Image (cartoon, rainbow, N blue to C red; front, side, top):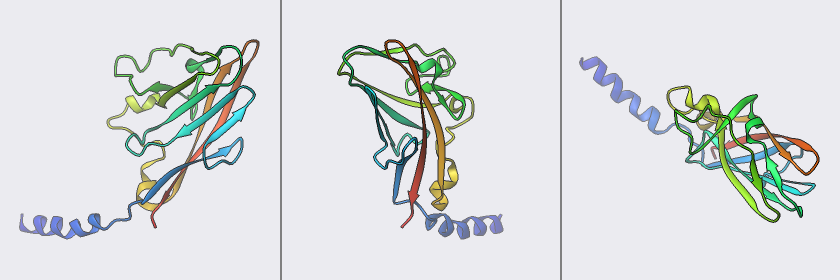
Length: 167
């Protein structure tokens, strides 16, 4: 018992002084490299935001800059080829098909999204993998967001990289 206690006390300084990131940021790498994570396309401005407290997903903001309605097809949106769930989903609703969301002209829609598998495991698997927080590595995730305009649907494909600076 005494040996176990000494072993635990010896490990405390190791964990206390482990490398922790001072700054975690999100960078868009595809379709264009953009450190602000904003993509401006025909009629839609799509941006992504990192929240350090909810590190198992990202906040997506979509602004309609057309003169008519657009529809975000959340049921077909994907993160790493997995369907998505919203922040307000619970263990009963996370598998439900997501309804299309209407964004009127000049309006903005903002949603926190995560992979559906986040609800299927105990605890949240980090969006950017656990190792980044520890070792300052970076993780990259692919996100597809389909948006329907009047006569066509465009699948917007993004690659987002999370960078953790430890210095």
